[in-house]
Image 1 (tube, one colour):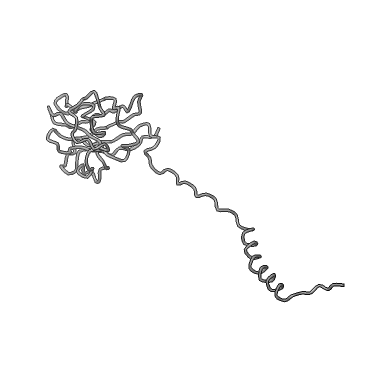
Image 2 (cartoon, one colour):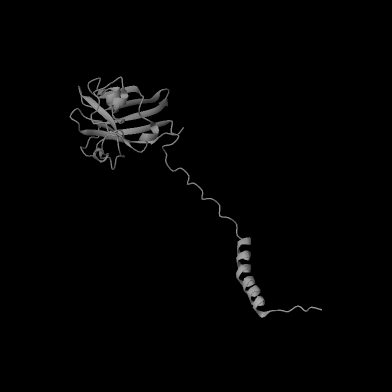
Length: 195
């Protein structure tokens, strides 16, 4: 009869394997795979906006309290409908108006940066023009015509279809009214108007 012989060396190897491998097996059995990280919720107010507005006020830099108005941007077939009405302008001036890069700080129109011009177009258009793609995106008066004061010079307005500008690109920026000499006489921040 053959006897089973236990070798101490084999027993040590087996014991070693149990102590090394068993904790690893136990650790992995109780763990669940980590879920994929959630995408952050959209925080911008620009997306999905059908209408944006800017309430215009005179620049605090010049103490111009008599200037007021409203610029409205609405999604429309073929582009964005731009409507602006301004009160308190000087008579017989042809005032320009533009979307500027940044929002107004403390009512000071000089804090709004340059014209919104992602395409890097050098010159402003003399407007209104047939091919709006030749104008800076923010050059509203170049595409739709300047504000010509009527009725003794107090009120001016424009209404046109802008085929270039997108509401999602301008929310959080500003509209600036320039006098004929180029001074920033009025401005307002563009925000989404949710219905």
